[in-house]
Length: 378
Length: 63
Image (cartoon, rainbow over all chains, first blue to last red):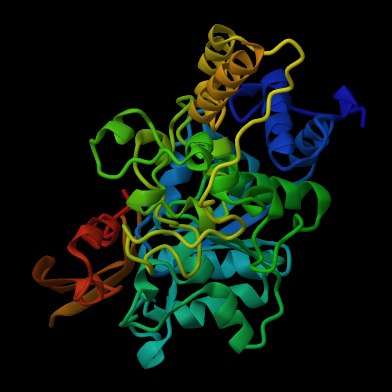
């Protein structure tokens, strides 16, 4: 879609040049699996129309989900989030306090009825009528019901709001409940998107907001209401250490030889094989490759996955969703017309070994065949 | 006659804080601060593998 430059009032958006801003929107579009050209459409949508009002309700949370947004450096997301959307209410960021803050929330809800996006971070305590979290004298339970009923959509950010997270861990002392379950029990039909993670990747959240602003609908969701563009694949499927898993090369203890060599962390309890998230692709903090838990040498503990994070012990082995470790490893069959020499096989294996799973197996097998061939010739 | 003022929520901090104070003759004579949210992480930690503790305690505060 071509965009009419004249129709866009601002040359400078959120502290970025127009060119950089469209570039940023294109990056987000690609992250969501949309064509690059859609970046211009997103940029147009967010600059031409009125900034969408966003109200942010914090319940049983640690503010990590807010931090994850504020700490994004490329581009300066705090500027973008404050200038792209109209952030009407957010306990951690509001200048006003007490009655002033609550009055503004009520006023904004009234003025933007049916149009605002409600972001929820933190789980909702339901035990003892919700007394374990109160804001301005009202329980988070009552506030969520009130605020979600008039929202256009609810975005549950973080594992706590998405499926319960830390506060819901056994024995769940406060009856911590995810936002969508509270809505369901109260018969509130507002659509909910879950962006789990502890904290979640800020780009998954921002992409969802921009998608909604541009297309006036939510992105495609899975059966747990998670955007498919971010939670469609297992961490295990995109992990840079996957070849080591397939080749049977594992770290057994922290600091052992396998760990130092960057082998697979499955035997240290990595939950990548049963956790759906785009961490290995999206990475964190805009600092380049390796900036995610497994990249730093620590097993994934499934922070985003219901029934895994804060539920299974950290060092218990994962229950792989799609694949189980094979008991035997298939050899890689080399077509040989003239037969590969041991030296040639070693070169090939040396090059491919780092990236290709059964490098060691290949060398061994080719070596055997080489010897066998020689044997028959003699 | 003492006057009571309540400020809830206190914004621009992490968590849910409420401040109550009593004012008498233009001076604060008594004040109470109270956290308005409880998750029971101490209770959640009981009986777990000690190697899992950091996963929970690290999340007291995400700032």
